[in-house]
Structures are given as C-alpha cells and as structure tokens.
Length: 268
Image (tube, rainbow, N blue to C red):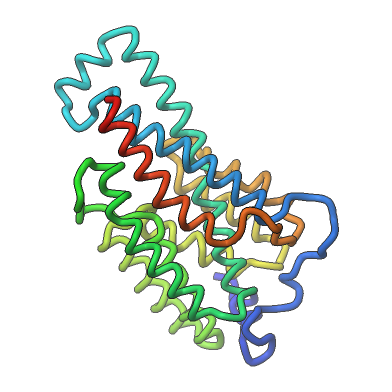
C-alpha cells in the first residue's frame, strides 16, 4: 500500500482540514457538492423504489412462491425489468456519499458535531429502513447505510489520528471493516474501505480512478455499474452549493423510506 497519501494527512503538518493540495480551485466550471449529492439522492430514491415498492410490493419478494407466480405473467416480467433498471441506477448513490464523507471529514471544523449528527440520524433511520426494506419494525440482520457511513467516519478519525503509524492505521481499518461486516450494515466492509481509499488518495490525482476501481469491485454483480458515479464526481468544482442545505440529505433519507413503506402498505 502506498504510504505517501497516508502520511500526507498528518494533523501536525496540515491541521484538521487536511492538506492544502486536497482543496479544489473554487469558481471553476463543474458540479457543486449540492448538485452531486442531489444526483446521489435521486439515484438512492430510484433504488429504494425498486426494493420497497416493486420487489417487496408488486412482486411480493418476501413470499418466494407468490413471486414466482407473478413473474410467470407478462406484467410480472415487465415489472421485473423496471426493477432492474431502477436498481442499476441506484448503484451510483453510495460512491457519491462515500466521496463526500471523505471530503467532509477533511473540511469540517467540527468533527465531533459531524459524527454526532451521523449517529443521531443513523439511529433515527433504522426503523424507517427496516419497514421499507423488510416490512418489519426491527430487522437486526441488516442495518441502514448511515450506520456504514458512521463506522467509516470513525475509521477515518483513527487513520488520521495515527497518520505516522501504518500498522496502527491498518489495525483501525480492519476494525472498521469488521464492525461493518459484523453489524451487517449496508455495503459492509467494502463500503468502509471505499471511504478510506477516497480519503487516502484525496488530492493526489488518483482519487477518482482508485475510487472507480473500488466501486467497480463492489458492484461486480451489477456489471460494475457503481463506477459510473465517478464520471460526475470527476467534475466536482469544490463548491459546496447553497441549496438545499446539509440537513436535507439526512432528513430525506428517513422521510423517503417512510413514504415508500406507506405507499406499499396503502396501495399494494
């Protein structure tokens, strides 16, 4: 593993925001952070429509026998293809959120507040996630994506804290990936590792290609579709963007899951 980008994030030399070469030139053409996050939100929404409404509702995936009967019809086959399109479109979401978690960790002046915000919304989102994805108030076998991002955030803190001790960083990363795996959070250990890679290579010119390779490996089963997220990310201009605000993305996560669950319960 290349230790150069690891050592370059020493707080002793660069402070809490990370190295100066990781900052992008403001004012240049491209996509703002808010626009890219909106792309991620739309991708996530399409993905969850596929799971919560089509798979769990129309196709009755929770009942394998009934699902097979539905898929045997022309309408069932049509819905299955629609579901595939939505799920593939949804592969763009996680790499975008992973990218901005790494960015946010380097840029924020209030890391504890950032982490606390992740923790609060991760806990608040678990019931909506379980209702939408599994049709139950509590499903301990799988956790929502904010849990993964929270673990990844804690992992970045450890990597930065031990920036001059490679062995300690590797132990911290192993612990983070293991925690995501054992908790069965969405995207698991590979999701945590993607965030770490995006942090390590931030500002080196390799962040986008390394992130794309990691996303491709994560999404092999869907023809490496997640790697396409790094096409718009390569156009990031370093601007935060003014709309719709940082809390929108957290609130939207819980809210849209509840809405999709409600649609399924009421109409399907």
